[in-house]
Length: 387
Length: 127
Figure 1 (cartoon, rainbow over the protein chains, first blue to last red):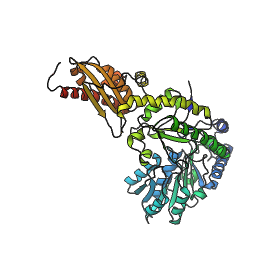
Figure 2 (figure 1 turned 90 degrees about the vertical axis):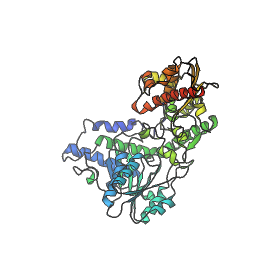
Figure 3 (figure 1 turned 180 degrees about the vertical axis):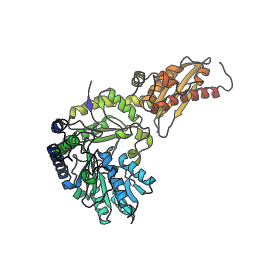
Figure 4 (figure 1 turned 135 degrees about the vertical axis):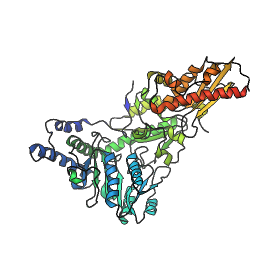
């Protein structure tokens, strides 16, 4: 049976080059980076080397990078940390209705705490209009949080323009770059970002480690209080193993970014073309050009997403509906609803996300199975398809 | 996640289709934003003699629809009408808690189809 992994936006395997640099830190180089002795110094040097690498990738200074447990923690820190640090200046936050749940639920939490949140709509391709950001800004706005690239549909936002608008008004700008880092250029200066979230496991690094960029001078209230680690922004003994892996993963991703972009977009475009030609009535979700290179989200009206995924899984092909964080829920994807899809079309959507180990043969293998699976599920649902 | 019985009925659903001259038709589920079933029953002498379904939905709802056709064939309308929400989940070897509504939808399909049959046949009860 085939064994094809097309769910790289959910997570990726650790590359062997990354694993190799991590391995010594499990046992022999186990020191606490805060310790003064040589064990601690060794760990500290490794952590700082990784920090410099991550900083270089996003055009930041090493002192502006703080390690966290991952994208969710970085998003929480950016949003709640800014809200609590700046609440004396105002209690208004601007975001979009297609953000990752780490952002949306942090904002929902702050609404319960008395903050006001504006959720901007997106167009049919999932793009935010920077003019709407400008119009939504008030004298009480303290933060704009808009993701760089969407995890479900891959649409890339005009973050540079949004960052300039926020900067002109003196408002902090946060962007979640968890899906884009390593795949697209991520430059905090070009983006005008004051805060930026990163994760390791989307780019062949380990799970459980991420980072946040905090522009020098931007104040953040910590969400975890403790022993003053990470310059008091994020207490907790540094996860040396994970941090070393994250640094290596970012280094490799930066080196290979351009060739990988061509590799991923080539496979994605081939699959998209074949699906459009060989399966009737499909709809591709996301922006046709301004999109992550390996991401393809397609609606198959008449077939339900979980059934499609289970059938593909039986055939040895691993994909997902929307984001893995919501696949336990029955509700249609909030991202697809925001594009204006009707709920039942949204329910019949699948995300294919390619990675470095995929090949054109995988595209052929998917197309050997997918048309039959869609036809079968449409047969099962025949009388149930609206219109 | 799913029992082998669920996977079997999902992968090879029984009795997919419709009965153009069905004696009772049951539509259930949420046609706006969720899973839906159309269940078609043929009934003779108070007994269900054939059943077909069309379902839009997740693996559990397709498996439940397939199972409910097997469960209902051969039962009297009285027996069919007394189906409980968990009946099909039990027959499937259990469903995850978040999927119990799929079992309930299949049961709703049976109850609605029997109601449809009874309303078409007035108060005349052959059983």
